[in-house]
Length: 266
Ligand code: IPD
Ligand code: CA
Ligand code: CA
Image 1: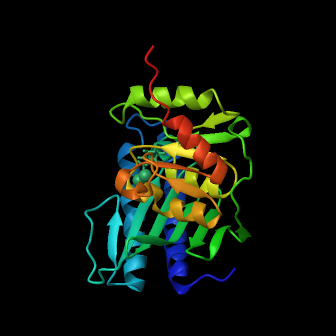
Image 2: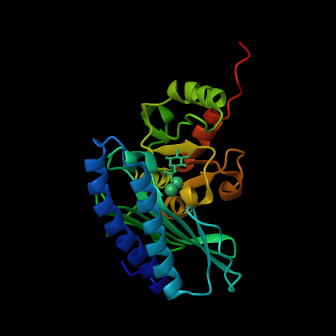
Image 3: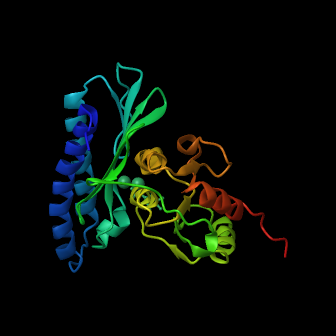
């Protein structure tokens, strides 16, 4: 698998930040049992990871813009390119010592995602994609799962929680989906969840209320693995709209139909 120079820069940034997060994750496991808990420590770990990524990316391409979760957007002098970064996706898992979290880095060119990296430092799984070049998990080429009927499918999702999202609307979506599928999972890192669709582990995934950095890299991974991605309105403005439904061409369509089924009147 040949990677472009740009993708290599993204991979190096993700691996370097991953080392930092892995070290801090070890410490979080100790802090679980302390009275103060690991909250502040995790915020610092998150900021540290973003700084590492920012410095690596900007060192290689100083003129590109940078949209990272942990800071104000930096507009680049090159108006065409922008990095979109979540230095720690799955913060709640990280905070609780659950080894399912990721670093997500995407490159946008003229409004289109052209490069994507999602890295889970706890398992050393590195997902990469370049537009037109396929998607990979480490060195293995990825293909979305081929199941054609929802009744055979395992579907990932996001679940709103205290202070976040529309609980009532989600319960309706869940009620509709749970009646049609073989299983539902909520793993807790949208970037990695979407990468799981690219890897054929999940047959499909949906979530609303996401931010650009949660989805940007994953969208390219799924597309490059032969999958389909839409927002909840059926369009392709996932980043603008904050929602995503993905899977292979059959499951994406079927899942979208079920998720959007109207609220029953009684
Ligand atoms: C969150 C995770 C989670 C999703 C939330 C995101 P964070 O990102 O991706 O799976 O359900 O909507 O905010 O806060 O851990 O970077
Ligand atoms: Ca996130
Ligand atoms: Ca985050």
